[in-house]
Length: 450
Image (cartoon, rainbow, N blue to C red):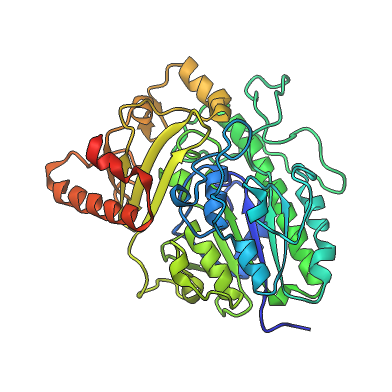
């Protein structure tokens, strides 16, 4: 039996960049995500609005920028950021629309009472065992009533302690030495990994990339198991599947930054009501658009003005949408409570403009990135460059950064001080101020007294 309204699955990875074969990483093995891409559409210009886990998830689940919903940074531990009590979230809206709602895996949102999923497993119950986590969803998807499943992996986030047997691997991406029951790890050698331009090609980087790829493949198998379950339960053909990541990989130059590796992320959409298969859409979309889009699929997109984003449901079949937006915005303020570095960004297909609000400060590292052997090795060896930019340029940033992404994909040449770009800088400043006014951004006052 099929329903007029489709089932909806939103899959959110933890710190996964554009690292699948369908997105151009030749070394990584992601057969399940690549199959999903062949059965749906990949977005090539999809962006988180803040490259920090909890803050990004607050945008995903509200359709509001995090500077407006209250989750300025991490929710857990001593950080204690949280959405405001009056924010209406995606699960609340879908419950009202008659959907059954469930969450599984990583939560990283607060306060829990305003995210009223009907069902949910205890946070951390499955750890990094994504195959087992998917299997635990079988009973929920089996019921013959439209559902929304929020499936959130802990892969490929850093964490897991030290591995003394390999001097270049002090930080694990999970448990690289042991398979989970019923699953088998995909092991990568340091030599076979693909080193992206934003990272230096050092032994430490290669060793960590091998573990990162292993964790991504673990995630991929969890995705595959959930797709298998949907098929076995007769739900796959009437289910919208959206796969994204909360922010870029846990390496310097990606996670916590609004450079491309931190914010340009995978977005794969498999929809039963769209005809395109195995194609790409280059429309500019952000995670603020996800709640509106999901509500649109559910027939519950009744108040578009309530969100900062907009539904991209109507452009999924268009490889290069013509009547769509020309720019997107991003806003990052905190990672951990000690990582205060507010940035506001406007990004077109050609240009990226960054306002570093706290530019006199040295850019700080998230704790897991600081401990990484890839970073500590670079500091130990006195590297001048870390990928496409110098370490000094990474740590000490200008007030404004302007990059021509068509000519400078690595964002290494800041054009903001060049005379011929002065009018463009002024235009982007005006656009940011308008964006801040429209989204009730408290940091708009920094234009006045900074």
